[in-house]
Image (cartoon, one colour):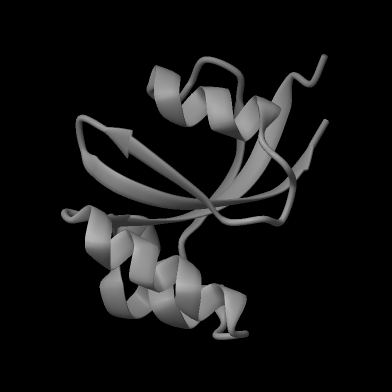
Length: 92
């Protein structure tokens, strides 16, 4: 079982915006460019990078996707902060 994960994310208020971001990613638009343009999280300035974090460090729904979701594929997750588009880079 992985103990750490490394992920990028984009935080937005509306599901429709998050879904549009996923469509753009699927068309080849770069994650970091979309994060800088749309993310309301301070990590957006760093292209959405959250770096490496431990299991249980993030809110439960976010954590679950990061430790069980498919790598590289964009995931849509709702938390108390809003809608997240998450791209899991790796787990260790």
